[in-house]
Image 1 (cartoon, protein in one colour):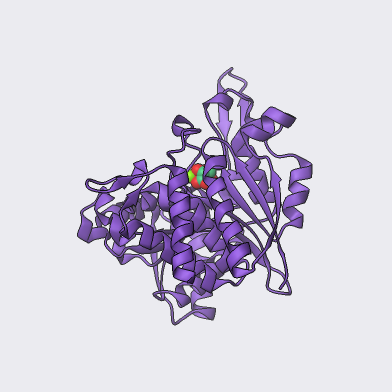
Image 2 (cartoon, helix red, strand yellow; image 1 turned 30 degrees about the horizontal axis):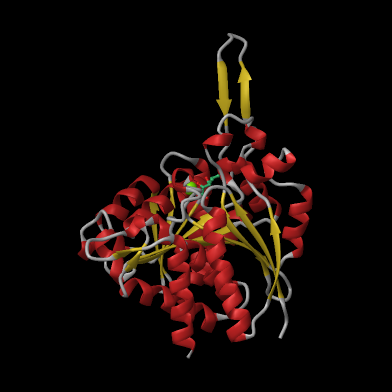
Length: 369
Ligand code: IPM
Ligand code: MG
């Protein structure tokens, strides 16, 4: 059995305390499933800034390149809000994505039956919901040049960002989305603003071309991003896989996440291109942020980070069976009535971060006999 190299970047806010629960599961796997991980810890975000004056150091970047996968907690918090743009905690995360060339961001939005009533939408609209948003992650307005704030000749200041996509960037993300759609419900919505943006028009043309050339069996629908936002809250179950650009993906994935009842439940994967051996660089992280308001109080929900670790098992390490075991443990613990504060419902038992983590391990013990 080969040992997998795992870099853990717990980050800021609730990051470290939810990551501590993942450690429990990693320890459990080493003991009970004989799967060992070679763990390295690193700093990112405000935690890295406080120690090194930068949100992601070259040395940590080296560790990321050397790892088989990276598991990230969360970055940011009010403490670092007034820092210059280049050293803000978020820049660390953006550098990690960009330098590792993680162009494909997979953001599943699914509803656990036990939590369907916690959605802000009516239960029947969301029960059984299972959407996969595929967000382009290394292009578009997040990284486009030119960018900056300048002073014009008339003394006015101007903020500038550039939305830009090339055909190869569009095709590689669309391929990831079509491939996923084939393994799921065989339905893909491609989302842009082709009615007002040239980059959106190119996106639509390239996706249409790729569909005809390589994926004619997948049902493809084009949709404007504003309409998609509306349709997500009107009738979310019409969607299976959604592919979209970096900025629209940022917005739509938050919207989809909220449909599920708790942001605290959702994992994500950010993947690079496959090498000759089929391995991809990858970072796994919860969709939620660092939640500084509740940090350090042992009340945060660790399940999104645990499920992100599950995605890692599935997508990076081909350990579908162990990932399914973890998914099942989460489901059973929720069915059993345990809830962290963010997903608390009447009649359920409110528990701490730690107790939730311990309950998952106990459930794994039961399931694995
Ligand atoms: C996300 C976040 C990030 C983004 C921030 C923290 C830079 O909102 O992962 O969705 O905008 O991509
Ligand atoms: Mg976001």
